[in-house]
Length: 425
Length: 156
Image (cartoon, rainbow over all chains, first blue to last red; front, side):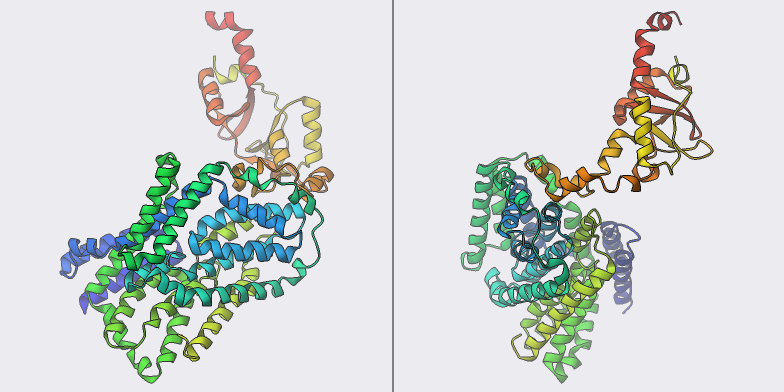
């Protein structure tokens, strides 16, 4: 019991530091991880070897591989090309621009990291709006929200999904089958809610559409041959994802294979590409794995899991809905990754206890994914998107967020709750 | 030769509340490219240069676009706004100045002045003690010191 208390306190301190941002989150979790190992050695519940074994290198490899591919792809100018081509297709109608950019962002987010997507598409979208003379706020908002939502649709779309995929052993196609359809519905549902909320900004037609038409999108492509090669590498990667369970390759191996292929085909300067890799995120994951590993060794997480079982005995659907909302609320406060990592061993324990609920994995993914939109601090993409908006004339403030994003988050979670009640999850 | 030997002591300054049109007037009349912004007690607050005045009209997010603006020639509504300059009167020195300034002390060597200018890529440098403005040195001042007083330098 002493061990469990000590380990829990270490986790709570790390979470407290993450929420209050008193220190950088990587410093918070790395100190937590070191403390956990020291405590583990002193009190005998966690060894260095166990700490190392608790790091899920499958997750880290998948993240690293995809980061490399996207870093190479973004340098070719592909994302800018897409954004400008879509802007031309909108024919200067603001709501159409929001539909094309927002919904495409959702689908791009299913394949690449949300932060990179927003980092490139966000500023370009504001520029297009400024050229057109329309308010960029709803368009940027739709990109942020729909990229958070879109990422839920695939195994590699969002870090929580990567974690869940690795822990549950579910394949890329399992994710597509279980999460993709519902994600697409929520993308469109959210789009229409956002369109209704911002209808005043989205009516009419922009004045200077000709200026946008005059932009030659092809000039955005800095390296046309490189772009084709990189898309080919991405295509090979995704083709392998579709079959990975049949050919016995792990998703992380495939992502690293794709990264290697992109390196080989384009031969970019590796030093530049590796500078783009978000090492702090990888370090955050590794350290948090060590913290959770220690917690798991003390048995506190399985005690926690067992304590919640009474709810499942009353009604399994009620249990699932509670998990969904708990995930949503926690994610909007502390971000999706810490909550997901705590829940993985809990759900594993529940499943060994004979709960009939493989769908708990999907519910966790949906809860953290749609909960991320609840508050502006819920995801890295939101934090970045808001900071980009502050550089435009229509900054996204907390009031705007609460009156559109939070509503969309709540409606998405209600929608999933209804699906659970209907027995679909 | 020290900084104090080449600096001009008679510095044209503005207070933080001076409007942009007046600053333009000073640029025009004096042909200076940069003017220190100082408080009433001569404490240095910042610097307004022609570059700062022009960048007022550039949206802040342009920095994030990187190379992506190179292939756009027609900025539509942004162009119209830039050319109509509706907000010209709204800006005062405090809004457009670059906060802080590149400062050296009076008794540093000329070589150091040149090195610091190059390091921060500025055309002029302020001379100050305890952040109180004493003088200004431009690239021209230093060149003059070298080329016109070359013999004096050698003899010194």
